[in-house]
Figure 1 (cartoon, one colour):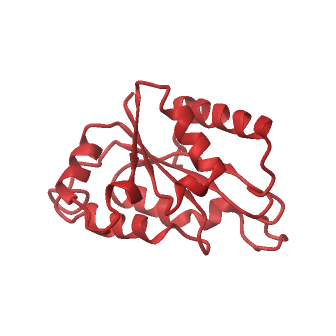
Figure 2 (cartoon, helix red, strand yellow):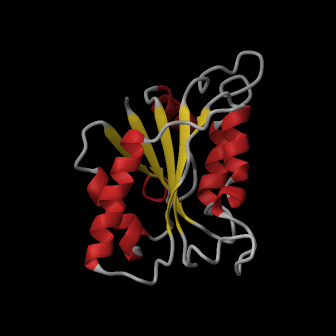
Figure 3 (tube, one colour):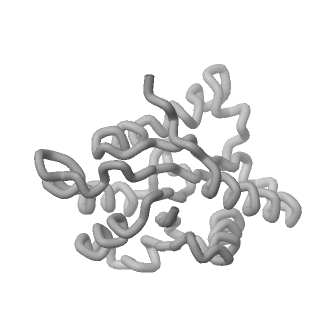
Length: 179
């Protein structure tokens, strides 16, 4: 299975976690890494190039830090620009049908803060519902997310474990079964 990881971090060089994840992913030939902010510093997205990338991969993982309970702005723009009517959805929009879509997300808050009774009042699964809905809308399967919480707690041991766990997740995760 060919996997595309679309990394959307506005300052990846300043991110211990996302940078560590990318470094580990680069060791695997069956994983393609595509960094949006490096590819499009001017935010002028090459839609045709992006669509070709999607078409040539079976599994697409969107990797990003949680920004105001959402994605960084360039990833939202990417969704709006790339997933077009007649390509990803609509009568002739079949190019994403059967793909698998997942999320790898890092958060500043602790795991406990992303609970119904926690500080943020919502679980990460609830916060990520728009991407799950997007996957459904474009006839893709949605994968359980991978997350790392409390990104202020940076240790070398935790960086290594998280990076290895992330690769394992990408290679073994199965889509949610819709009942």
